[in-house]
Length: 295
Ligand code: NAP
Image 1 (cartoon, rainbow, N blue to C red):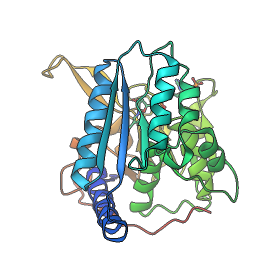
Image 2 (tube, rainbow, N blue to C red):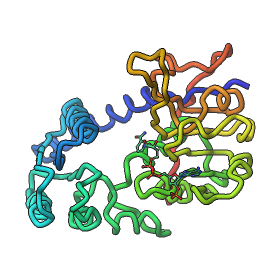
Image 3 (tube, rainbow, N blue to C red):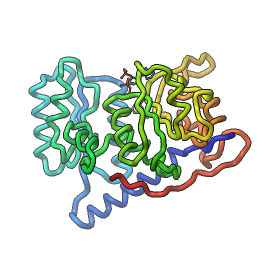
Image 4 (cartoon, protein in one colour):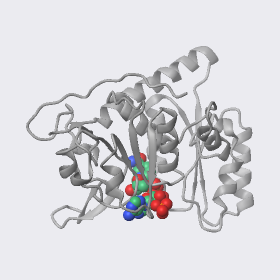
């Protein structure tokens, strides 16, 4: 079997277009575009890159960026004051505090201080709580798991009654992913570092979302034939032939899994070519989506 590639780049382009249209609509109806504030503390290079990319993504769809670059030795009190100021600013519609924060800052207190109406990361306990509860909806959903759900929807995966395994239970990815999948009526198993016989769970799964942070730990022999595999992992793997001495790989061993899976996301996305075709010799197509409603 040769898996269909789920083309995240193409789907991201579609989402960007939807956002662009939403921004135009807001401008037409309310005479202003939305504003997104980013809060960057310290000089962590990776964090600075993420924030730069977020600002670039905003510019591409017409969202205004409001940047707050703060020193790494800022006090908890001063950082809270910045969050409060952004909460009160009517020109700010969303606030992203870039994580991780320096060790002397109480991350939980900072995230909890964000107005839930501006908590676009969806990390506020009230938003996470509403995501967990039946019959409630959060105001915002954490973006990485929401993106994974969208990939599944766009690939036409029927989650209703599907057996899903989420590998990893972090607050940012694994846990909210599991909640989203169960809201979409999948039967969800969460596996983590203490799970015994991981492969026995994976082999029963129709859908797997891997968010562990261990290079290529999921291999083809652990999958049920035809399973849909979403690989969230981004890991460096030593590769003396690569310019930087390493290459990026996911939590899933792409080659062996693509031979067994029904559909799979490549890491990095550049593995998939622009026309979205199957691994191996057989052309396939990116199926386009049935809407899944979260209840
Ligand atoms: P994290 O906070 O380190 O969580 C990792 C999870 O994996 C934990 O729940 C841990 O279990 C579990 N785990 C560790 N070893 C395991 C094992 N041997 N078997 C089963 N489970 C195991 O990581 P994260 O923030 O969720 O990120 C996960 C991966 O996704 C990373 O590679 C990260 O770079 C990537 N990521 C990608 C995106 C994206 O946009 N694509 C966004 C965020 C993260 P315990 O809870 O028991 O410790």
